[in-house]
Length: 89
Ligand SMILES: [Zn+2]
Image (cartoon, rainbow, N blue to C red; front, top):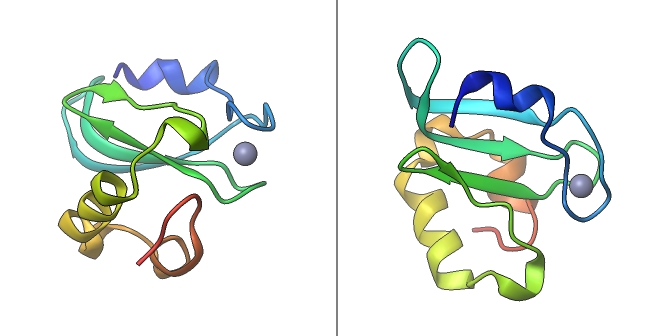
């Protein structure tokens, strides 16, 4: 996603803005892989292949989210790994 998209994105659950951004792979203005986190409800939203996955809980799959957390474990803060929503390790 374009970095400047961060200025308009809000949490789909509680509409909180701005979201925290963790970058795993990025060039100047595009984030290839990363994580968006809502500091209000502690939900996280993966950015995979430049696409932010801003889905509500009922449309998410625990297996996919856990795999994503495992893959980028070293770049994700402990509090999100252990208590992020909707799924954590
Ligand atoms: Zn939220």
